[in-house]
Length: 147
Image 1 (cartoon, rainbow, N blue to C red):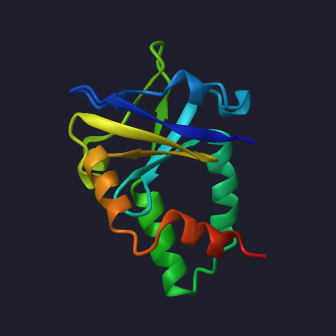
Image 2: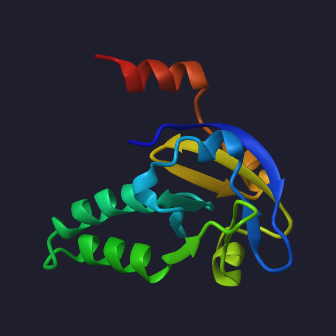
Image 3: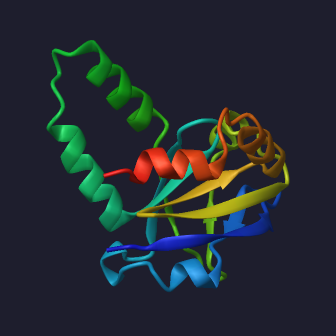
């Protein structure tokens, strides 16, 4: 089970290659076989899943109803944008030009560890996302963690 956490600033080269930080790589299971699935994330970011975590997500998706229009839309959107990338010898993955454009990523990226996945953001977009939150972190934490 992955347990990604932390934030890291990196860059993407002209070929769409991005390093996976060493502090995140140590949480990648050997079951992932250095393979990642990259797809559209929530808000304007990309989600990067190690293969073993992606397989768990696929099992959840298989349980969705093909007769429900929302389930179909979610499944199509997620899978239509999904690409597979193998970690290269320099610990990089390659992100397609289409996905980089979707997330508004040009050169600089903010990489966030988010438990089972890694999110990749344009740093400016992430700052704007943070600033647009209607409530403070503390108020949201109180609501979310309230039992």
